[in-house]
Length: 203
Image (cartoon, rainbow, N blue to C red; front, top):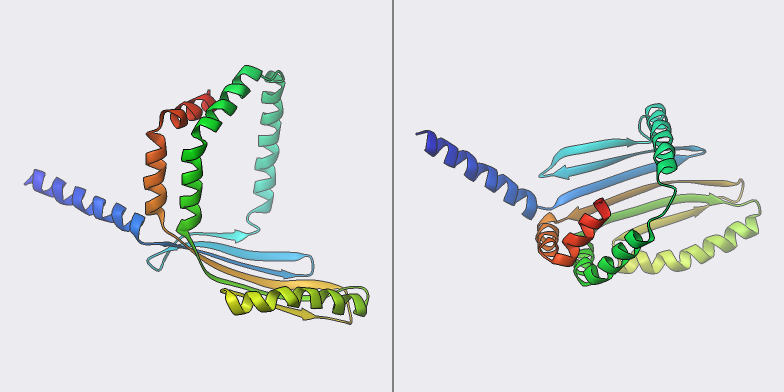
């Protein structure tokens, strides 16, 4: 009985893991700029469930304090490691060159795993001179019109001839398939140069 329950639990966990690898994640980003204020939100969604969300900017004061402490720690560590070990750097470089074919395959797999679902940009722009505003907006339109027609990018640039301004909204959605990345990463880890490179970097 206990073995059956354990077996069922293992099967369920395996199915959850496989679904997580095979069903794409959705990455959503929304940024709004008004004057000097920038606000936004980044979300990670799977099967319609928001599994991660972060406001932009986040907890600024806490982050500043954390960065300050990390900087002080790094400065202390830097004092201890002022002398560069050239042999160590050369070993890393040589191992990186040996690992490059496998790293390149992993990078290409990561690139192909992303699918652009939506990219929307709505910008209001104005320069000091109305003539400059018209000229610059014309240049931008010459790029955005083909993009709007041929891709999933939707860019709208609205000129403002009465004031100096740069405000707008940015919305983006990407889909990410983790399965191929995990397989290629495991394949890379089976290669001796890659493992030696990781160990050398960590040492």
